[in-house]
Image (tube, rainbow, N blue to C red; front, side):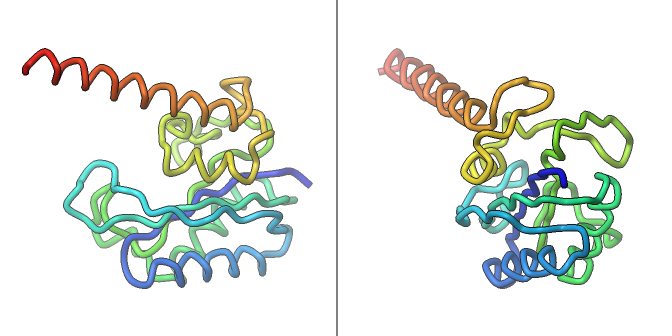
Length: 173
């Protein structure tokens, strides 16, 4: 069994119910055991800010499935829960449900349809904070540090950005 972290998000419909349904569907998958579920967090959308806020979280699973098969099952769950990837929705746009494979053990994969670990996990608070909550000791296979350490670096970067913004604003007055 290998540990994997799956990020979940929703900003259309009954977000909480959709996320709970996605977790329940993961629990029913052969070769997948749900170990932990993060708390749900309300987050601002990335990119197009004219869409509803997201509810995001993460699930830690133990799986016997290789990453490509786990990803396929995740995409089927999205389809069953109403996500239609073929209707031309813009990337980063509104969606009923979104499941992202963030980390799968120590695997590093670079393929057109699957990149592990998730290429922007280290900079996306909405994914990294819940992942660190449930699997803080898991080592990011590229960064070589735990998810907890990566999450703490986000806070430092955010504080630096706020300090720089405050300095700019104080110069104007």
